[in-house]
Image (cartoon, rainbow over all chains, first blue to last red):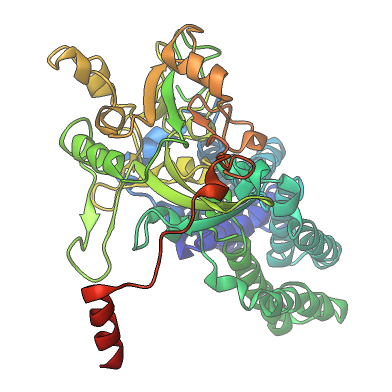
Length: 290
Length: 249
């Protein structure tokens, strides 16, 4: 898949933002006034910034409101509704915490649940696609949720929780890579089933339908990024998990904590880039590109 | 509404005969021609006369080589357009309801004024049947020429999809798969019409007829063949002189 910056920024930042909102909604860290204001500002900036970035890949963003209508069948629609609901509920909760020193517990818990639901619906947009076997796995939503919660705990300064969640997230990341590498083969789609000719002998793409490129090849048959995939995995894992976990173990001051956060965010970005660049769409079979 | 209908009254679709298709791409051109001038946004091209032309097509013809173990390789031309799946993943993923499957005839369409151009339907399609138009930024797909097949302003023989109407080899057939006596149902039954990527669970309506097995001459040599002496001889007379002279040059 084409690793479009808009979707990478969107899934990474909004994941972190909603992760932080989850912890804030549950009352961790227990803050009020100006400190709470800064925490909520960071969370909303990440969540809303990510959502805004996602509209950049739309052909007609001016019609985006229509996307709230099809929640019965569409995960993308459900995501939109969950995101707006989470932001509204957490917005009201934030008003209470920041300006009235009131923690409306029920509202906070509801906001936290909606924030987690938003990340889950985001992950299901990808996990539902049978045409992309590497995404069509139970591990995909698990990875999005763990990344979001670990990042949220880290941003919220919850050292013990962040340590545990980062270790879990790292494990899920490894599981995703390990499981994902065999996903295309397990899906059993080959050039033989794609053409229906596999039972007659070895099938080879002889001539493409056109001499140039097209929308399908640009969007779905991204092969450039796979060259350095293994190196990028190591970079992503070290930045996203190893370094932050080591820093948290030595109980950091503010400066080291900031480095842990920045390192984690960089690692998440690299991981998300790989998530798209490495995903193989079965349509590539028709072009002999798998 | 982007939930799929539980059943459709008719199941209109195409049968594509891989045995007959000669790979001339006439269906590609007639499709582009009809669909750029009629229903919906035109099918645009970017840099059409430049070094790197790209454009939107609803129908494309691939060519595959099949190498059977015990016979020579075969070249098979393979037209591919929307299969109007019964369990169309492109419909259910649509967040706006722009993508829908019609209850009356099973055609999968896009309401272009509702399309936000998110591209998720194209992601969900295993067959690459949908393309986002580079100029209009809305999703384009085969409409089964919905503006031809019911169009009473056209002569009756033209009320079929442009690709079917134009195919010079008769490799494309249009009809109702819900009717067991239709031309397409009969062809599918007789020739073993197949689904593309059945493992994806999309239940395509369009069917592909596999190429017939090629015959072979082995064991079919005429009994008189051994008596037919080769006729090639050394040339004599003028031709012989010409042959020698040319040889010397």
